[in-house]
Length: 90
Image (spheres, rainbow, N blue to C red):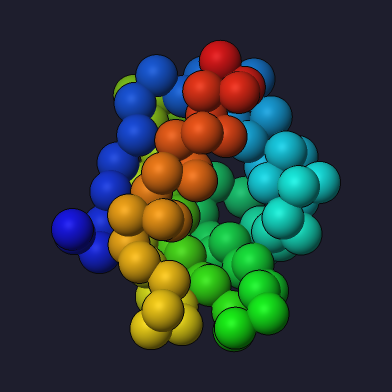
Protein backbone atom coordinates (compact mmCIF):
# COMPACT_ATOMS: atom_id res chain seq x y z
CA UNK A 1 0.00 0.00 0.00
CA UNK A 2 1.15 3.52 -0.69
CA UNK A 3 2.55 5.78 1.99
CA UNK A 4 0.26 8.57 0.70
CA UNK A 5 -3.50 8.40 0.24
CA UNK A 6 -6.12 10.96 -0.77
CA UNK A 7 -9.75 10.89 0.34
CA UNK A 8 -12.46 12.72 -1.60
CA UNK A 9 -15.83 14.19 -0.75
CA UNK A 10 -14.49 15.88 2.38
CA UNK A 11 -16.59 18.98 2.92
CA UNK A 12 -15.54 21.48 5.62
CA UNK A 13 -18.19 19.99 7.94
CA UNK A 14 -16.88 16.46 7.39
CA UNK A 15 -13.28 17.66 7.87
CA UNK A 16 -14.16 19.24 11.22
CA UNK A 17 -15.99 16.07 12.25
CA UNK A 18 -13.00 13.90 11.26
CA UNK A 19 -10.65 15.97 13.42
CA UNK A 20 -13.05 16.03 16.39
CA UNK A 21 -13.90 12.32 16.15
CA UNK A 22 -10.23 11.33 15.74
CA UNK A 23 -9.35 13.27 18.88
CA UNK A 24 -12.29 11.92 20.90
CA UNK A 25 -11.84 8.28 19.89
CA UNK A 26 -8.06 8.00 19.47
CA UNK A 27 -6.48 11.11 21.01
CA UNK A 28 -5.25 12.27 17.60
CA UNK A 29 -3.88 15.81 17.72
CA UNK A 30 -3.97 17.87 14.52
CA UNK A 31 -1.24 20.50 14.56
CA UNK A 32 -1.27 23.38 14.05
CA UNK A 33 -4.83 23.68 15.31
CA UNK A 34 -7.25 24.93 12.66
CA UNK A 35 -4.73 24.63 9.82
CA UNK A 36 -5.36 22.90 6.50
CA UNK A 37 -1.79 21.55 6.39
CA UNK A 38 0.21 20.01 9.19
CA UNK A 39 0.56 16.80 11.14
CA UNK A 40 -1.84 14.45 12.86
CA UNK A 41 -0.26 12.52 15.73
CA UNK A 42 -1.80 9.54 17.49
CA UNK A 43 -0.06 7.92 20.44
CA UNK A 44 -0.55 4.17 20.68
CA UNK A 45 0.79 1.59 23.16
CA UNK A 46 3.36 0.51 20.55
CA UNK A 47 4.47 4.00 19.47
CA UNK A 48 3.33 7.16 17.74
CA UNK A 49 1.64 7.31 14.36
CA UNK A 50 2.47 10.62 12.67
CA UNK A 51 0.70 11.59 9.47
CA UNK A 52 1.18 14.68 7.37
CA UNK A 53 -2.09 16.06 6.07
CA UNK A 54 -3.20 18.55 3.44
CA UNK A 55 -6.88 19.50 3.30
CA UNK A 56 -8.06 21.19 0.10
CA UNK A 57 -11.45 22.81 0.72
CA UNK A 58 -11.80 23.79 -2.95
CA UNK A 59 -11.51 20.18 -4.16
CA UNK A 60 -13.05 18.66 -0.99
CA UNK A 61 -10.08 16.33 -0.55
CA UNK A 62 -7.65 15.51 2.21
CA UNK A 63 -4.34 13.83 1.48
CA UNK A 64 -2.44 12.04 4.21
CA UNK A 65 1.13 10.76 4.13
CA UNK A 66 2.67 8.45 6.68
CA UNK A 67 5.67 10.13 8.27
CA UNK A 68 6.22 7.75 11.19
CA UNK A 69 4.57 4.60 12.47
CA UNK A 70 5.45 1.50 14.49
CA UNK A 71 6.49 -1.35 12.21
CA UNK A 72 3.64 -3.56 13.47
CA UNK A 73 0.99 -1.05 12.37
CA UNK A 74 0.17 -1.63 8.71
CA UNK A 75 -0.56 1.10 6.20
CA UNK A 76 -3.93 -0.56 5.57
CA UNK A 77 -4.82 -0.27 9.25
CA UNK A 78 -4.18 3.47 9.10
CA UNK A 79 -6.06 4.03 5.84
CA UNK A 80 -9.01 1.88 6.94
CA UNK A 81 -9.23 3.77 10.24
CA UNK A 82 -9.33 7.10 8.44
CA UNK A 83 -11.98 5.80 6.02
CA UNK A 84 -14.13 4.56 8.92
CA UNK A 85 -13.97 7.99 10.55
CA UNK A 86 -14.89 9.69 7.25
CA UNK A 87 -17.80 7.27 6.80
CA UNK A 88 -18.98 8.03 10.34
CA UNK A 89 -18.85 11.78 9.62
CA UNK A 90 -20.53 11.62 6.20
